[in-house]
Length: 335
Image (tube, rainbow, N blue to C red):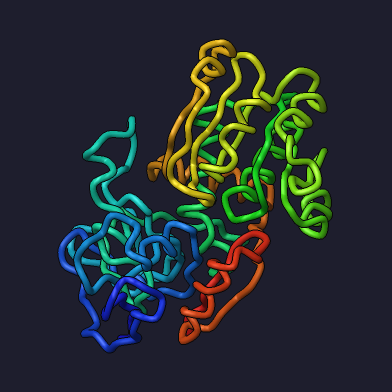
């Protein structure tokens, strides 16, 4: 089988398409022929050597979907022919987050999804929504689940709440879609008027171009009548101060990304003066994934796909992620 590896060095240019022996499932395992993968900013950081992984070679990427081709002895919850997604955290089935539950992550401490056939524990996969294509379902395990956990496991979004999402990448667009399903009002920020127009077509109630409105935190607080209930914070260094400004007293800031950098000075008085809840999170459990896919299927929701690349053009897909020009998800489709 073919697989992509970060092989020569930690860079996009250091990736190689290689031939590897096709794995066979053992007891309690399943073999999945991968059909599609999708990119996350975390994957770009990992390929560049900024993801905490130190050993080469590494098969990267964590988001994907495929078809079960064989099951090992003792497997009953999954069958050959099932269309499934591998879970980002292979070690987090249910319960509260812990060091143990986060131990095994695809495209990091475990080989990722950029391989034609994966062998995984049967407990580490889950069926995808029946109405989605493989390319659509490939967007769910990391980006979709991160947005779902942020809004419904941590923030407990309810009808009438206001939610602010930053930008129009994968997690932010999922957060927009999920928040609208919950009956919330959504503010979207971006530097592109064209992208903001597309966000409005998806249901955004208010949009702010942060280049023309640098003090967008104040503008969001004013529009929401005193402050935003929940903020999906994906920017990091250059956005956190504005998120603090935008949040209402008692509001929630869900820290997910580091698109603009890793460190920032925080105005600590803003935290206690507003009694803010600041929560850092990454992805979620298989139980959360199954709650999410049930909602996606029940509502006929479709992930937003920006561009689809062929399997041999993975490096081009990574460069598009690096440029930040996408709206929604970037997908790689296997032959």
